Amino acid sequence: MDTNKIVARAKSILLSPKTEWPVIAAESDTVAGIYTGYILIMAAIPAVIGFLRLSVVGTSIPFLGLYRTSMSLALSNAVTSYVLSLVGIYIVMLVVNALAPSFSAEKNQVQALKAVAYAYTAGWVASIVGLVPGLGIIATLAGLVYGIYLLRLGLPATMKCPDDKAIGYTAATIVIAIVVYIVIGLVIAGLGLSGMRYGGAGGGLGSIMHSGDSASGFANGSTGAALQNWAKGVEEAAKKADAAQKSGDASAQANAVGQMVGAALGGSAKVQSLSTDTIKQFVPDTLGGLPRTRISAERNGAFGMQVSKATASYSDGAQRNLDLEITDTGSMKGLVGFASGWVGVEQDKQTDTGFEKLYKSGSQLVHEQWDNRDHRGQFGVVVGDRFSVTVSGSGADISELKAALGSINLGGLEALKNSGVQTN
Image (cartoon, rainbow, N blue to C red; front, side, top):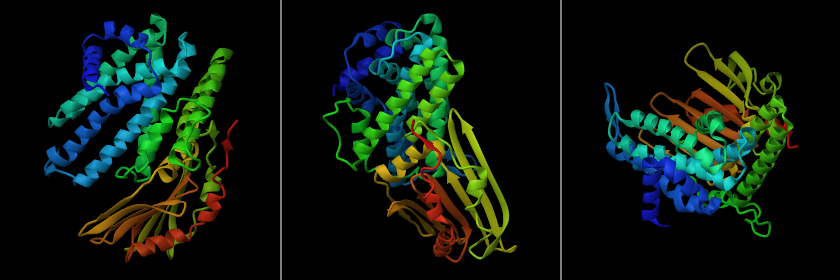
């Protein structure tokens, strides 16, 4: 790994992009080569800056002063953001490649990755400014705007896109990329994984950079094998999107791209999440000895993806209260499976006032959080690599929340883990 070459390339793409893009496009490279020779180093910049900002520099909170997190939490967040950025880049590359025929461009994964990776350079470098208090947002916006400009210049050179269609190609890529990152962020935040430790990062990268050689591969049951299968599913979805593009049917094209994004996040072309009537059946009339006072259920969808959720409140009308939330991640169940099953996850934080834990129990991912000061907490599990069930509220200790969640029909939920899955 030539650091001087990486620095020279970053300077050239930022200072003279119009002359550098043709050079980049003409280079013979591979997906693995671009990752190891450029992305792995450059993508680490914002992760390192985030670690320093959280644990060393600190964050200024109005009226409260400077706040710093612990080294361990800051490191966990840095690793999480780093791994997700590597996966996100790969997904955006798939989007760029799948959209190519729609804009009279040539499909080529290596060239698509070049377009994405070198356009990201602006954001990676701009993140350094984030160390200066108060300039983080400005740096982010500057990196975003210049990155869009770089992508606009790069698509004609790398993907052989006609110049008059480059603006539309860029806009479509940016819109879908934003959706992908929002969805990833919501899923990770919703599962309480922002502080996890990723034990399988190496395996994940190995499969992401899989060469396609059928004679090689990861051992069955390993992290690499799981991600390798995921990548194959995404590739198949991308082929279907390409076929839809050639059909000339605008509706089929939009649906195919949505399914492709869904495959990238969910591991199968399309998943219909549980109906509101079905998911409400798992909400009991009483929970932890408390009567139900409110219930609601909803199912939302976009870009061919669906997510369902049921929530309920329970109270004795005095001081005791519990909240229940059951989420069917639907089209994003593959991403949930990645978090809960394919990589090693672990968190065990103890303080004077309580604790927070994240661990595997059998096939379930478990999250515990408790505050001794007000005797409130949260206990949640991921069932069937698809359903998130969380009970939060007050009690004598965490065991009451565990008992309350234990009364939910988790077995019935797990039996529905393949419900609505369409793999063809």
